[in-house]
Image 1 (tube, rainbow, N blue to C red):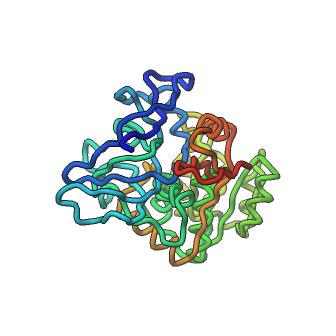
Image 2: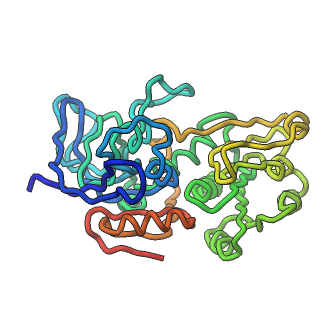
Image 3: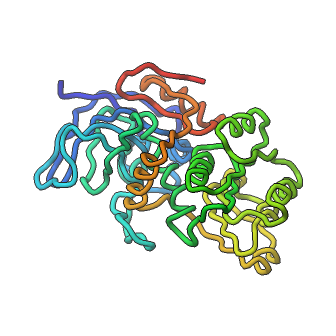
Length: 342
């Protein structure tokens, strides 16, 4: 068989999504062909489907940026991976390492075609060995959410130290990854949510504290940290960051990641000045970060939090779940294994 299925769009908008039969691509020099096992969804995928986020897309456009699968063929000159190896892909196509990303980077499921397909071709430099401890469903969550959390805590700015406290504002994939990585590193983790049901699930994961997201929630954080505040924040909500700045310790670091509260940040100046706050943006991360994350996951037996798994044919339902708000990650199983829907 030399054809495959993929989800694609010929124009923007969810109503344009269609499942199409196309030829299986062949890897060129320096490329690998991967049989996709699972695709993890990010809220960015919904934004890309709705609006394209201002990027110059090529139609028909295949969405999705994060996958895990098996290399089934390699092109000439490939040395990093071999056929038969399980891999996950990088988010950016050419950011190998370093604080400064090279110019002209492209994103899978953005300016490059995405991964919601049965087979995908990648440059060999854009794949990394998958954790031996995770199946494809769990491994597919590393590309964006996992690397973003790792980059915020360990990759950029002051590294998290054991005994410090991390605050994650939300219960999505990045927030829960951040909490899990912090705990594995010997730090404490506080997670906020407006949902008591989600806070109960957070506590069941072993997170140090779950704090209801309501007016004055920073006072709860200060009480839990004996007035010290938190050394690191994964800011997923965005919008008004007044409570976040109140909860921050002196010299603390805020990694701005999400924009669920809007595309404009609002924060009081005095806490920034008086606390000598470090505020940074996180745009996922480099391949070296993904490799370090894989090592950390294997060493500490970390299992990513997956809220639901959908069949490939049910991608629209998976997208609806993503839009409603997931506890952790929503994953599409591509290889036909049974779905698991919460």
